[in-house]
Amino acid sequence: MSIEKIPVVSASDEHYAPFLCVMITSLLENTSPDTEIDFYILDDQISRKSKAYLRQTVKIHSNQATIDFIPVDSHTYEHFLVSDHITTTAYFRISLPTLLEAYNYRKILYIDADTLILDDIKGLYDSSLQGKVIGAVIDPGQTKALERLGIQSKDYYFNSGVMVVDLQKWKEQNITEKTLKFLTDHGDRILYHDQDALNAVLYEQWAPLHPKWNMQTSLIFERHPAPNKEYERLYKEGNAAPSIIHFTGHDKPWNTLENHPYQQLYMEKLAETVFKNSKKEVVSND
Image (cartoon, rainbow, N blue to C red; front, side, top):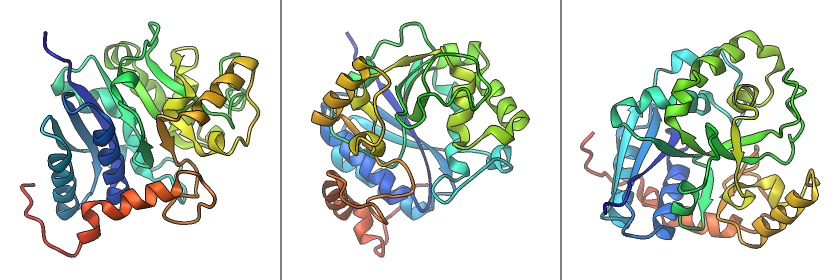
């Protein structure tokens, strides 16, 4: 019986390439070496040198992993809201099924570049989606944000930085087209970029995953009360044994973040990547 390959998608520009390297490294270090991982990077003008470093990183840490770079037409998203820590690159995930159409995957993992993986991601990939389009983790600071988006629903709001995506259901329900339409028609409601639009389209069509798979900074610091007793328990479990640390918000380990319990580990990982030798030339096949 063949083991299913796990496609892992992320997005990056040149500035985020070293941080993407930490995500890739920590993922491969914590996932069984027998697991075949196919990385696909939605490429917002990453340099040839940085791509070479990322290829080298994958080769160093696994004999079963591959990495490909998928160019994206950023003009599709150039008029949408950006901020100091959310660039146009973040919007690329909206086009996932089209960008990966040639590969015929039934589902994929999307993981933001500003994450630190502490667990085998096969457990995340195998999560039940309960017939929904995606699996995701609640966003603790925006639990009731659907009202702000003009959506009448008691569903909670999810964080789009870690998602398990059923590509077939996404395509069948025209999620890309609906999301782009919401961004175009309701730009005045958008505060949190593509994440807002995805929530406005995918409400009641996402399966809640255990918070441990996307321990956002606000969860780590317990900034927001859980919406109910069950989530209170899950938040505590996630903090006791996180699987993915997600450095959400403006404050990152490499700039202004302070007192985060995983900041030192992250910076140690960053210092160990091949990017520390960035002044040395690496042969690129790109």
